[in-house]
Length: 347
Image (cartoon, rainbow, N blue to C red; front, side, top):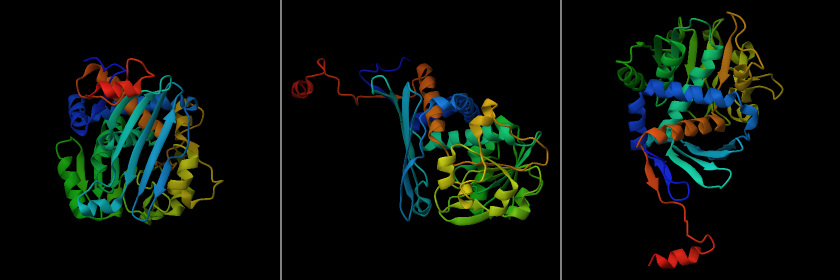
């Protein structure tokens, strides 16, 4: 199905159509495709405009805009983070995103990004682990079994070859939910009653919790030599998951330091503490894992280029599928100077 004309309609991917699109491809294959798109854009990192996300913080949450451009296409994501929403039966995170032509300023795509963010976050985690995790890693501890957990588990299975996921959450019902959803995944699912139990024998540890506070989800004594840590949950000022001593023992990899130093685990460290940007590893400009005993830490907070990659990937998919609606959101009079005349003729 051809895309709508740039000068008339804008393709919109609703939640319903995003779900259909994911099922058309398969969740794991879609996350693999997203990882490939993100990796390709990380290889041309220096072409992008980069800025820390624009955030409006409150005591109960945050609303953020995440913009970027590669000089040809502009993109942004609107996203919130409200941990208390869960108690009201609402999503902690919701999002939508847009791509536009730099040449004309016209929108090219409008899409839901609540589901797409979950998919791209997991894809980015697994992409980082592909470059940083110990060779032959097959077991992952998943600490925090909320909305992101299943996506992470499936992305690590597809991209990194994980065969076992050890689940732990302070809310046992979240663990039961996650185990139930992954029962037919082909993964060996091990529900655990403590973080210590979850990390036992795991070469990869993923932390993904939602509390908006300084917390110690993972203590230093639980992290052995050779571990790769995927810290997904720390994503705003005043919110962390890892004990500071873990950071001091680890080689730390980040997306964009000016943003991560504000929002990530490394907000606990001095500004001068060295970190490596993930794009540098992918492009060959910096080393990744160099020894079997090295502790690597991906301090992930999410960055606009990843959302740009995800939207670009979806736009490419739409060229071969009807999973979108055509929105009439561009006022387009025959004479660009006669906007009022177009309005009057609509009577």
